[in-house]
Amino acid sequence: MRTPSRRTALIVAAALAVFAWAADQLTKIWVESTMTLGEQTEVLPPVLYWRYHLNPGAAFSMGTDYTWVFTLIMIGVLGYVAFKSRDLGGSWLWTLGLGGLAGGVAGNLTDRIFRAPSLTEEGFNSFGQGHVVDFIAVPNFAIFNIADSFIVCSIIAICTMMIFGLNLDGTREHDTAKPDAAEHDTAKPDTAKPASKRPATSTPDAAETDV
Image (cartoon, rainbow, N blue to C red; front, side, top):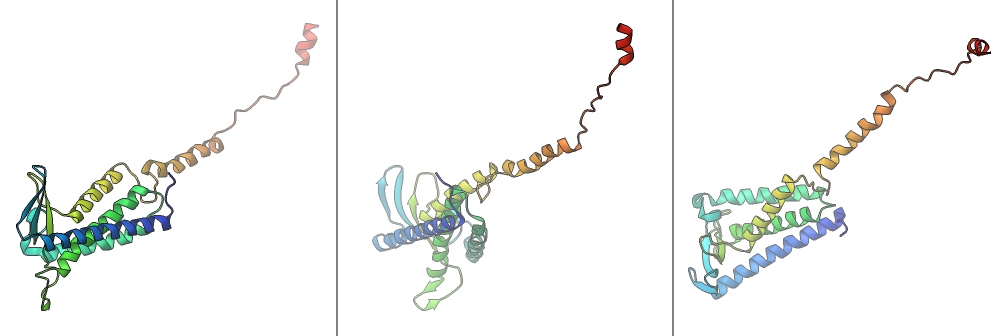
């Protein structure tokens, strides 16, 4: 498969981000319109259920008194992704990783800003205090949503690429070090002194003696 150009990478990343955001918001609207808060529906019991839940905090409902902090963090993450996307090109993995992360963060950020109690019928009540809609429930785990899935998968992929030294532009850390080594190797012939050759000399005296 051909590696993506910078323009192609940006388009694909943006398209994936929009898809992730739309899938997240549409499923949340579906849950709100078909289920009551706290209701649970069997999907693939005992492995998977739909359970309507509102999360005012972060993952596992932590930090419920500091919702606005998570809103600022998500805004910062989006800004960082937008900044780093300028270096995209040459790696499909980084393209999908940043696109999925941006879409997932944007999905939950939309809840923080445009859902109650941040936004009420009277208008905006407080900044970034909206509760995130969660509905995917599996045994012995927190309830989550589509945006969380994109965020977690993207972070795992990004961390893996960083561990293995894959750069945004598709190069690897050990590849960037090769030119220096090559320059060092090519410099050796210049510094090495050529072996001196002793000029051939005639030995007339020895020849005369033999005669």
